[in-house]
Length: 266
Image 1 (cartoon, rainbow, N blue to C red):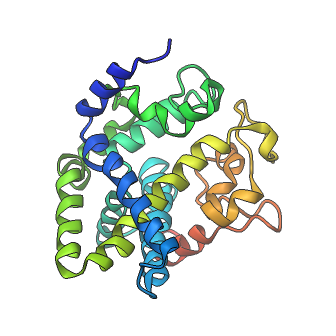
Image 2: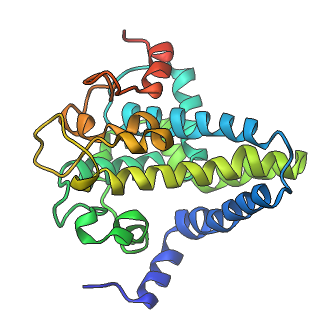
Image 3: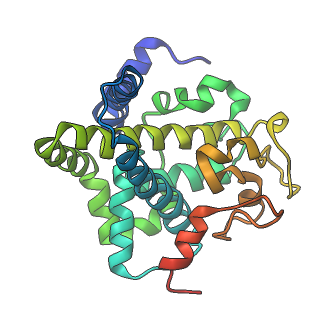
């Protein structure tokens, strides 16, 4: 049954990560893009945005939230772990406990079934972003191991304040620095993740290396946008492997190159 607009609005107010981070991010991210198109951005915007993309998307979300915290595909020392955790928070996709609970407990466990919160089987818009506004209550049972980690508990409790304090300090230093080093990369990171969860589960858009029970595919055409996360079928076929590429010569995974430099278990 479709969720009513009234219920969607109520759900949004019930979830701080939506009304405090995701919703304003859309307006501010689009404003940054408009500035670039209209010629109002500083000439160095692409450098800071690239830095932000590497830190938030590649290290924070792809390497951190996804491969390290969710699938425990590799290990790092405590200092590196905290840096990665901070970058993941600045990716703007929720606390690590909630992110892992959704990814482990709903997506991987029930991929492309009615219990998968963001399967494209339920519609493209639902899979892309609509699902975030439909489920005000998420079970964290699949992420209980993270609740025994003090760093994860702090990140969960102070997720919104950490983002606001970081963005506030950056804005006090320079509005442009804040807009193109923090806000725009956060916006890009979120939509790269949404493309990954949505478009890499549409069979017509890619190919499989693994005969999985779900619709996960590898999408070479998505590689320029989401890099190694484009090899999504490889990941579903071998979830604990931190290298999503390498099954075919063109399957490159730049995030894994970073992991190879920072991991403690070779």
